[in-house]
Length: 292
Image (cartoon, rainbow, N blue to C red; front, side):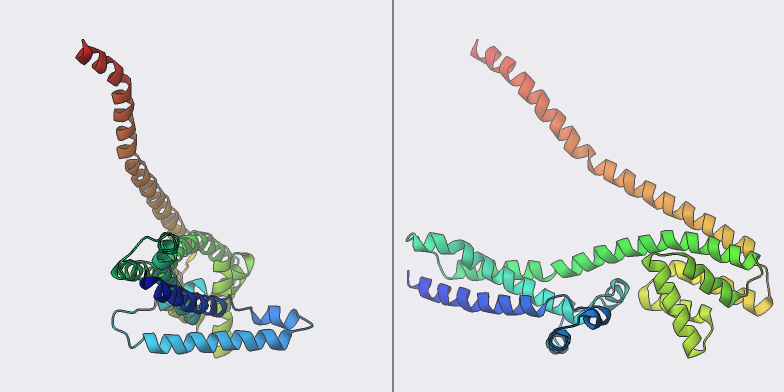
C-alpha cells in the first residue's frame, strides 16, 4: 500500500500534463477562418501562434534524439504541420504511460498489492507502442492520398490532351485543365502552377518539383511530356491519352491485386470456422459413441 500515494501523485501530475498536451495539440484554425470572425480574432491568432511555438520547441528537442524521424513528405502531402504531429506523438506516449496506473487504481484501493515495477513496465511498453501510432496513421493516410491523386491524374492527363488538341499552349493547357477539376489534387496542381507563374519558372518544372517534394511519381509523366512538347514542338495528344489509358490500367490492376489479397486473408478464418462447425456437429455423436 505504500506505493498508492506515489501512484496517485504520478497520475495527477500526468493527467495535468495530458490535458496540457491535448490543449496544445488542437487543430490550428486557418487564416481565412480567423479573419471571418468578427470578435475574438486576436485571441484565436494568439492561441494558434502559441501552439505553433510550443510544437516547434518540442520538434527542435526531438530532432536531437536518436531514432526519432518526422515523415515530412507525407505531412506536406496531407497538409499537416510537423509541430502538431510531434505534439500528438508526445501526447500519445504520455497517455500510454498513464494507462496502466489508472487501470490499477481500483485494485489498489481495494487493498490489492501491486509491485511498483508492474505499472512502470506496462506504462513504458504502452508508451512505446502509442508513440508510433501517429506514424502509422500518417503513413496510411498518405498512401490513400497518393492513390486518390493517381486517379485524379488519369483525368488530368485527358483534360490536358483535350486542351492541347484545342490549340492551347503547353502552359495554358496545364492551367486550364487544373481549373476544371474541383478535387484537392487539382487544387494542389493549380497552386503549383500559380506559384510557377509568379516565380517565372516553367510550369513543368514546378510539377517536377512538386513530384519530388510530395513523392508523386505519376505527376512526373505530365511534366516530362509537356517539357518535350515545349522543346521540340511534338504533338502530345496521343502521348497524353496513351499515358492516361496506361495509368487507368495500372490502377485497375492494383485494385484487383488488393481485392485478391483481401480475399486470401479471409480464406483462413473461413476454413477455421468451417472446421469448428464440423466439430460442433460431430461432438454429440462422438460423445454417444464413447459413452456406449
